[in-house]
Length: 246
Length: 381
Ligand SMILES: Nc1ncnc2c1ncn2[C@@H]1O[C@H](COP(=O)(O)OP(=O)(O)OP(=O)(O)O)[C@@H](O)[C@H]1O
Ligand SMILES: [Mg+2]
Image (cartoon, rainbow over all chains, first blue to last red; front, side):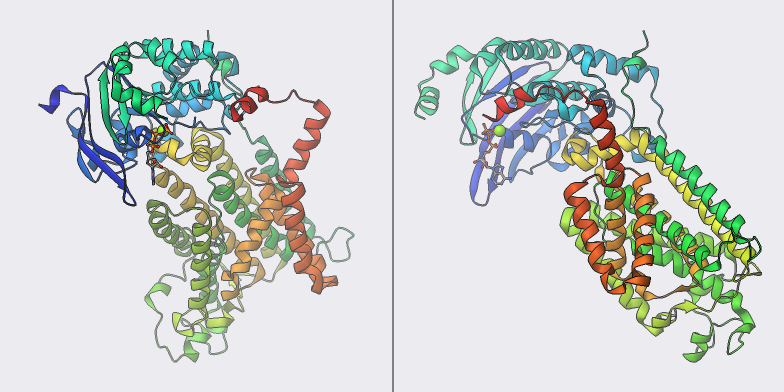
């Protein structure tokens, strides 16, 4: 039954020092789907991603991806399985150029010696060039990533996720620190990505979520409060209470 | 159409090639000059030859520290342990070469073992009469110890200060162990009174000349191999692990494996440095394991410039030259000046002497400021 889902989280709970950050959370994602996750600060959105990517182990519940039990795997193994993750605080390799950041992200060489004895192939050059074009950073290709703006780092990190060629992308607050124009461009980029990959995106920016036009899951105190399209969800009195009550 | 055009200028570390050539030429020149007649103006004394050999061996230790600290962010405070282990391995061979010329004249057992009334060599001394076997030990012993230590530490994600402290504990524990007579390495006297290497008199100027050139060649080779390692994709990965380890994990890399590879390689370079050191300095004792030696090697690297390869060599040679001068003329001031040097470079030259060059070049070129600062501050608000 779980096999029809790409990602299935069932009755997952996590406690930090007695505090239930995730409380009986269930979430199911179909192959090819894009899902937006919203919820107030501290709702457990990032913790949910930590669980999926193997950074945090759930106390109870099951998490499966294409039938694989993710709770038994560590983060590099889950990444190799085909789940890419963008951190809430954009994290790129600041000392390296944009080009080198993307090269390191490319799916393939992962063991130390294969990297040590590797040569850059024509195919890799092409993949990096394609990614640069997609994330519109061609002109900064040889600049150190550390010197870029917040928004540019967000895009570079998304580019690095794509370099991994994952089946599922988990994207935590991709438009933080972006201008309105950049925000809309990011929505376009994610919709483009969603043509070939599944996406879970966490975001506070409602204009952005509206622009995505996908099913929205509202998290609150570690569990799902509501789920549906944005208009239905935002008309839900419980959601209004959680958001407006603040 | 070649997208290679947009490939960034890599950090090519071409200075490492220049330094490798310079080190080689320096060792050959000094070696040649040492063979000139004593009354010649250009004659180099055995004292200077020993110092030069010592500096170049220390430069290998510094290079090994820079590989792990500068590139993988592992602040080791115990690397002299690998240096000393390489030294002891070479010392075993040199002891065996003494043969019947020792005070007790036993063809197999070094004097200190006779003194302990041992009647046979402990198993770990087997084969130590062969230089080839000992050369293998020089590489293998530091590598195996580093392998086990690194595997345990990196796998359990020990890093930062904690890692520094346990590296320090490692070298301290080894020092205490090597002080024990029962360990079979000569206790606090260590291994000394060497006579020959491969049948050649260690005190002959020709032997010293060859040893210095060999040291120069090994240092140059270590520089070139290190350069190859850090300038390619693996080098990028090291910096990635250093700066954003979790990002590498979520890309599917296993940082503990990457650190282990550079850590073990670095320990082997330190071991070779220690072996070459012993051939020229003529003694190895447990004080080589003392924690302050490891700390000094970190200071050499920071003075020369961390993460630059060449800087570590420059730092090791300059600081040790300073040490020689100071301890001869003003022995009481050496520790103060070492401390001052460390504080001054940390405060004013965070990239060491190598950074000085960059600094001046940048000033004169008046480069454009890094991209888009304003947006960053906008975000902070
Ligand atoms: N490792 C941890 N140890 C202790 N508490 C934690 C840990 N990680 C998260 N928490 C707590 O769990 C709760 C959920 O945090 P989480 O970061 O998942 O929220 P979020 O929905 O991503 O919020 P935001 O919108 O601010 O990013 C918070 O109260 C947080 O303090
Ligand atoms: Mg969060």
